Structures are given as C-alpha cells and as structure tokens.
Length: 183
Image 1 (cartoon, rainbow, N blue to C red):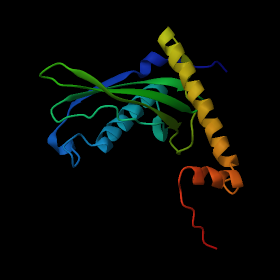
Image 2 (image 1 turned 90 degrees about the horizontal axis):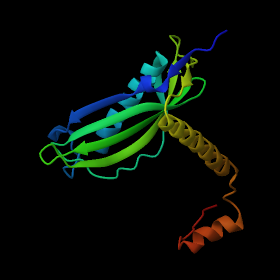
Image 3 (image 1 turned 90 degrees about the vertical axis):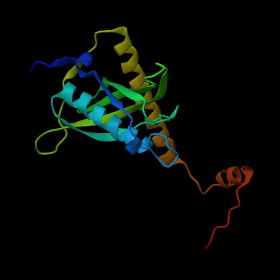
C-alpha cells in the first residue's frame, strides 16, 4: 500500500476578529476564555484541513497570556500543523493583536493544541504522512518532538514521585508550609 503524503503548508490558516465590548472580562480586557475558544476553533480548522477529517482536541499545551488584548483591537491568529503522528497532529497557534488606529502590534500568546482525527464512528483515524517543504517546518516539527518527549518525562516523573518520603515532607517545610495531616 502506497503511503499518502500531504504538505504541512496545506494546514495553514489565518483568522482575524475585531474585539468587542461583549468579549471583555471584569477588568475590561478581552476574556482569556474567549481567546481560548477562538484558538480551539482555528486548531480544529487547521487539523481538519490537513487530515480531511473531523478532529477533536486532545490536549492544550501551556497558554501564557503575554499581553492583554483591548476592546477595539484586531486579533489575528495564525495556525498550522507542526507535527503529525498516526492519528494526532500538533497545531501551533500564534496570537497577535493590533491597535488599528496606531498600527501597534503585540504578541499576545502562542500555544500548541494536540488534535486527533476521528472517523465516522468516532474512532481514531490515520492521517496523511507529512511532506515538509521548508526549513521553518523542519524546525517546528523537531520542536514538537522535543515538547512531546519533555511531556512524557514530566508525566513519568509525576507517576513515580513518592510524596510520602521524609525528603518530600522536608521540601514542603523548607518552603515554609505548615503540614497538619489528620489520621
């Protein structure tokens, strides 16, 4: 059986949306949850465009909100599939906001969404193998592999960490934490 390849560049999507007062939180800035919803939508679109299938969000890597977004700013999100597994894809997303009066552009956050392709029965479905066509795509693919390995190491450490040892309790005491365990 011949393997099917698809260019990663086929997944690239850009969306822009003007931020309205209805998108604000209690401090008058654009609500982070609203931005996350838009990020999830563009991750779905990029993964579905690449795979040709319905995709679901499996995980979201760290989202650091670097700069607040103001009402009236134009938010632009750029997304592309950076890594492809058997049925999963890592979609990189970059969020910027522009003050459309001054032209000032801020980097607001970047994140990585792991999306999984599903068939009509809801089972994981194989996606095309990637065809890499630029050095930037090579860099992104390798960075995704590095993040995947680091996450596995972190998960392994958390699974095997014994929180009942004397050293574990002493580390908490050293952080000026009072421990009052019952029973």
